[in-house]
Amino acid sequence: MPTSVKLLQNLLDYCAVKNQVIAKNISNIGTENYRREDVVFKDVLEENVNSILKTSNGRHINNLPGDISPNSKFESVLDESTDMDSGINNVNIDREMAELAENTLRFKFASRKIGDYYRNIQNVIRAGGKV
Image (cartoon, rainbow, N blue to C red):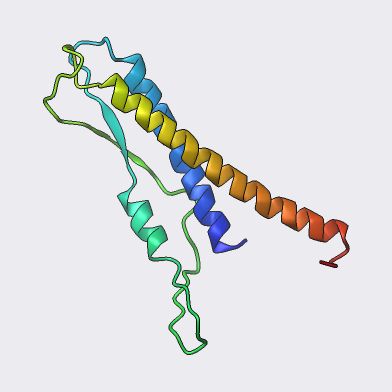
Protein backbone atom coordinates (compact mmCIF):
# COMPACT_ATOMS: atom_id res chain seq x y z
CA MET A 1 0.00 0.00 0.00
CA PRO A 2 1.45 3.39 -0.92
CA THR A 3 2.71 5.65 1.84
CA SER A 4 0.18 8.34 0.88
CA VAL A 5 -2.73 6.00 1.58
CA LYS A 6 -1.27 5.19 5.01
CA LEU A 7 -0.96 8.90 5.71
CA LEU A 8 -4.58 9.43 4.71
CA GLN A 9 -5.64 6.54 6.94
CA ASN A 10 -3.82 8.19 9.85
CA LEU A 11 -5.68 11.42 9.06
CA LEU A 12 -9.02 9.57 9.08
CA ASP A 13 -8.16 8.01 12.45
CA TYR A 14 -7.25 11.44 13.82
CA CYS A 15 -10.49 12.97 12.50
CA ALA A 16 -12.56 10.25 14.17
CA VAL A 17 -10.90 10.83 17.54
CA LYS A 18 -11.08 14.61 17.13
CA ASN A 19 -14.80 14.40 16.34
CA GLN A 20 -15.45 12.41 19.53
CA VAL A 21 -13.56 14.97 21.63
CA ILE A 22 -15.41 17.90 20.05
CA ALA A 23 -18.75 16.16 20.65
CA LYS A 24 -17.78 15.60 24.30
CA ASN A 25 -16.87 19.28 24.67
CA ILE A 26 -20.15 20.43 23.13
CA SER A 27 -22.21 18.05 25.24
CA ASN A 28 -20.57 19.37 28.41
CA ILE A 29 -20.95 23.07 27.64
CA GLY A 30 -23.33 23.49 30.57
CA THR A 31 -21.34 21.36 33.02
CA GLU A 32 -19.83 23.45 35.80
CA ASN A 33 -16.02 23.32 36.05
CA TYR A 34 -15.72 21.02 33.02
CA ARG A 35 -12.38 21.45 31.26
CA ARG A 36 -12.35 21.45 27.50
CA GLU A 37 -10.34 18.65 25.88
CA ASP A 38 -8.28 18.59 22.71
CA VAL A 39 -6.37 15.97 20.74
CA VAL A 40 -2.58 16.08 20.42
CA PHE A 41 -1.57 15.61 16.81
CA LYS A 42 2.04 16.82 16.87
CA ASP A 43 3.76 13.42 17.05
CA VAL A 44 1.80 12.05 14.11
CA LEU A 45 2.24 15.30 12.19
CA GLU A 46 6.01 15.27 12.68
CA GLU A 47 6.19 11.59 11.74
CA ASN A 48 4.16 12.09 8.58
CA VAL A 49 5.75 15.35 7.45
CA ASN A 50 9.20 13.82 7.72
CA SER A 51 8.14 10.56 6.09
CA ILE A 52 8.09 11.65 2.45
CA LEU A 53 10.84 13.51 0.68
CA LYS A 54 10.08 14.37 -2.91
CA THR A 55 13.04 13.99 -5.24
CA SER A 56 13.44 15.20 -8.78
CA ASN A 57 16.77 13.55 -9.43
CA GLY A 58 17.88 9.94 -8.91
CA ARG A 59 20.95 11.17 -7.05
CA HIS A 60 18.86 12.91 -4.40
CA ILE A 61 18.48 11.29 -1.00
CA ASN A 62 15.36 9.17 -0.80
CA ASN A 63 14.40 8.63 2.82
CA LEU A 64 11.07 6.80 2.79
CA PRO A 65 10.20 5.01 6.02
CA GLY A 66 9.55 1.31 5.96
CA ASP A 67 6.44 1.58 8.06
CA ILE A 68 4.22 4.39 9.23
CA SER A 69 2.32 3.28 12.26
CA PRO A 70 -1.32 2.90 11.20
CA ASN A 71 -2.45 2.70 14.83
CA SER A 72 -0.87 5.91 16.02
CA LYS A 73 -2.25 6.86 19.38
CA PHE A 74 -3.79 10.29 19.69
CA GLU A 75 -3.60 11.76 23.15
CA SER A 76 -6.48 13.71 24.59
CA VAL A 77 -5.29 16.61 26.76
CA LEU A 78 -7.14 19.07 28.99
CA ASP A 79 -7.22 22.72 27.98
CA GLU A 80 -6.00 24.49 31.10
CA SER A 81 -6.95 27.98 29.95
CA THR A 82 -8.77 30.03 32.55
CA ASP A 83 -11.03 31.79 30.03
CA MET A 84 -14.54 31.04 31.19
CA ASP A 85 -16.21 31.77 27.85
CA SER A 86 -19.55 30.32 28.81
CA GLY A 87 -19.41 31.60 32.39
CA ILE A 88 -19.48 28.00 33.62
CA ASN A 89 -16.40 26.44 32.02
CA ASN A 90 -13.80 27.08 29.32
CA VAL A 91 -15.80 25.61 26.40
CA ASN A 92 -16.52 28.15 23.66
CA ILE A 93 -19.32 26.90 21.41
CA ASP A 94 -18.20 29.05 18.48
CA ARG A 95 -14.68 27.62 18.62
CA GLU A 96 -16.00 24.06 18.94
CA MET A 97 -18.32 24.47 15.96
CA ALA A 98 -15.48 25.97 13.88
CA GLU A 99 -13.21 23.04 14.80
CA LEU A 100 -16.03 20.62 13.96
CA ALA A 101 -16.44 22.19 10.51
CA GLU A 102 -12.67 22.10 9.90
CA ASN A 103 -12.48 18.48 11.05
CA THR A 104 -15.38 17.52 8.78
CA LEU A 105 -13.59 19.04 5.78
CA ARG A 106 -10.40 17.15 6.63
CA PHE A 107 -12.34 13.89 6.94
CA LYS A 108 -14.16 14.42 3.63
CA PHE A 109 -10.87 15.24 1.87
CA ALA A 110 -9.08 12.14 3.18
CA SER A 111 -11.99 9.78 2.54
CA ARG A 112 -12.44 11.12 -1.00
CA LYS A 113 -8.72 10.70 -1.78
CA ILE A 114 -8.68 7.15 -0.45
CA GLY A 115 -11.86 6.37 -2.42
CA ASP A 116 -10.26 7.76 -5.59
CA TYR A 117 -7.19 5.59 -5.05
CA TYR A 118 -9.24 2.40 -4.72
CA ARG A 119 -11.51 3.36 -7.65
CA ASN A 120 -8.41 3.73 -9.82
CA ILE A 121 -7.23 0.27 -8.76
CA GLN A 122 -10.67 -1.10 -9.53
CA ASN A 123 -10.64 0.49 -12.99
CA VAL A 124 -7.23 -1.04 -13.74
CA ILE A 125 -8.48 -4.46 -12.66
CA ARG A 126 -11.62 -4.14 -14.84
CA ALA A 127 -9.54 -3.10 -17.83
CA GLY A 128 -7.31 -6.12 -17.42
CA GLY A 129 -4.29 -3.99 -16.66
CA LYS A 130 -4.78 -1.83 -19.77
CA VAL A 131 -4.77 1.83 -18.86
